[in-house]
Image (cartoon, chains in turn yellow, green):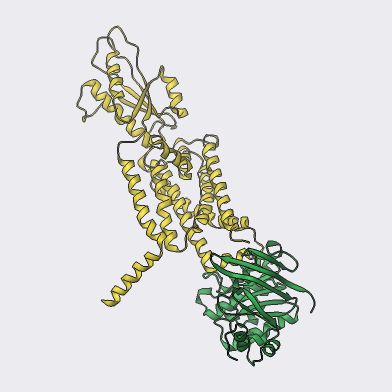
Length: 369
Length: 241
C-alpha cells in the first residue's frame, strides 16, 4: 500500500510542477462545456434570414390562409422573416447567400378561405443545419394556418433545394462526409506534426538541424512535403469508404476535394509545428489537441450554422480553417460546383496556410542566433 | 601554428540570472585539438552552441573561420551534441545519409562516407539497426559519425566519450589525432581530466570564463602539481598547497 501511495503522490507532484498541464486540465473542459452549453441552448443565437412571398389580397379571400401562414411564420423562434416581392428574386438571393431560405405561398381559389395551397420552401440544400430549422418552422406555420394539430402530419410542403443539381435531399452520410473528411485531415495532421516536432526538439535533432546550413523554410517545407502524402492517403481512405461503401455523394470534381484538403493540411502542419514550441512535453502537446480541435468542431458549421452564432463567435469561426474547408467541401461534394464557386474558401485556406508558415518560420528563427 | 580557426573575445551570455558565459576569451588554432575542461555548468556547452550559431551572445565577438557563426559557415562545422541527437526509428545508415543530405553531401558520397566512418568506429555490424536498438555508447558513435559525414574542417564535440568503454575511447582519441594530423581543427569538451593529455592544448573553463590555456604539461608546471586535476583545482583556489 505504501508503494501504491508513493506512486500516487509522485503523480500528484508531477502535476504540481507541470502548471501548464494542470491549467489545461481545468481550462479545456470549461471551454468545451461553455461551448456545448451555448450551442445546444436556444438563447444568444442569431436568427436565420428567411424571405417570404405572399400573394396579393384577392377579392375572393383566397389569399387569407397564406397571410395567416406568413403571420405564424413570423412568430417562429430562430427566424428573421422579411417580405420578398417575387419568388424569382428570392431564389436568386438564396443562391447568392443573402437569404438562408425563402418561403413562397400562393392564393387558393376564391372562396376557399380555409385551404392553404402547397407552400414552397426554397433552401440552398448543401447545409442540413440551415434546412432543417426552416422546414420545421414552415411546417409549424402551415399547421397553424390550416388549423391542424401541430404535431400531426402537415401536407402541402414542397422543399426546393436550389444549389443542388437534382432536388433530392442528400442522405445523412452525404451531409456528414465533408465534415468527417475535414476533421480527420485536421486531427491526423495536427497530432502527428506537433508530436513529431516536439520529439525533434527533445531528442536534439532539431538543434543539430539548426546548426546545419539548412534554411528554416526548408525545415518547414520538408515537414509539409513529408506529412502531406500520408494525410492524403488517409483522406482517400475516408473519402473512398464514404462514397463506395456508404454511398456519400461527390457531385463535383474529386480534384477540388483534394485541393481543399491540401491547403488545409499545409496550414495545419505549420500550426502543429508552431504550437509544439508552446509545449514542454508530450502530455502538454496531447492536451492541445482538444483545445485546438473542439472549438473548431463546434463553431465551424459542422453541427450548427455559422450564421446563427453570436457575432463574436462568428468572427472567431472566420479565423478557423475548418469553417472554409467544410463549406468548400459541402459545395463541391453536394452542389457539385466548380473551382470558381469555392475560390473564396480556397483563398482563405491559402491565407491560413501562409500565416501558419509565418508563425512556424518565426518560431524556428528564434532558436538560431 | 598556422591560422586561427575560432576566435572568441569577451563573450557573455546570461539565461535569466545564470551567467553561462562571463567574459570568455579563447582562440582555437587551425589544426589543433583543444580541450575545454571544466565542471558541469561551467559554460562549455553554451560556448560550443554559440560557435554553432545556436546561441547569440549578449556581448563579445566570435568568429569561426573568419566569419560570424551562422548558416554561411555552418557547412564547415561538424557539431556533435552531448546526447545522441539521432532519429530513433531510423537505422544508423539512414541517420548518416539524412545528415549528409542536410549538409549538402550527395547521397552516393554520404553512403560511402558513412560506411568508412562506421568501419572506423567499429560500428559496421550495426549499420542497418534502428538507433533505439543500440547501446548508449554505440549511439554516441553513430552520433559522431553523423557529425563527420560532410568531412568538416572544424569539429565541435560536446562530451564525445561519455558512455563509451575505455578501449573504444582510446581508439576514438587516436582517430581524433589522425583527423588533426590531416588538418582538422577539433574543439572538444570533457570533464574527464585524464583526457587532457590527449589534447594539444587545454582550456580550463569555470563560471563562464577561461582560467588558463596551454598544453597539459605547461599547465601542470605552472601550477606546480603533477596532475591536470590538481592544476585545475589550484587555479580555482580550491586545491591544497
